[in-house]
Image (cartoon, rainbow, N blue to C red; front, side, top):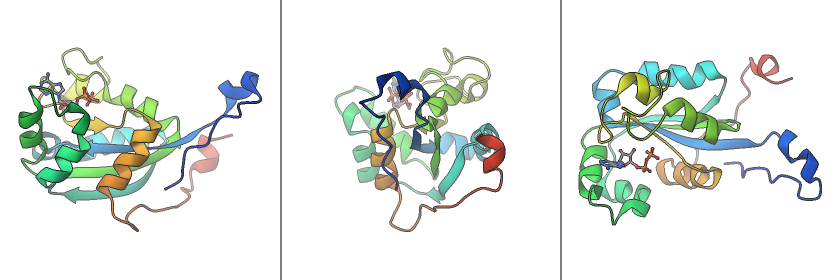
Length: 169
Ligand code: ADP
């Protein structure tokens, strides 16, 4: 897994034009799988132009769900969240691209689907925070951490899509 490129701190005026290639961990939660939304959700990231580097259907063990959501351990909804995430198979994905972490969060929409904008995945496909169909990493650091957590060595592929010259000038 590539580490994110650091912006050049000696050229602050150029920082905005630095094209940082990030990695993000996207997961279709058990409700998304059960509701037959796998293809629809993958399509949104594919069509945007991001690169899929890892993909698997996976029954998540309780310990992994707890590790993934450890920052939310003290929340009252934590036990229900772990029950939800382990209630059926999830689709684990690693995606790569310029600004992919922030852009994927925009494509996904707000945590509460009723507050998520139309056009976003949650805005279009869900109604409840406790059934919000998809996860996306909230920072490039967490993208790398979560891909490391959910994928084994060798499960993430390095490859060059043929469309790349048509996506990046
Ligand atoms: P996000 O997934 O948008 O990054 P958070 O990190 O705040 O949101 O929460 C992680 C997940 O925990 C949410 O996607 C949702 O599945 C669940 N969650 C958050 N808040 C609540 C809540 N108040 N009630 C039930 N589940 C919640």
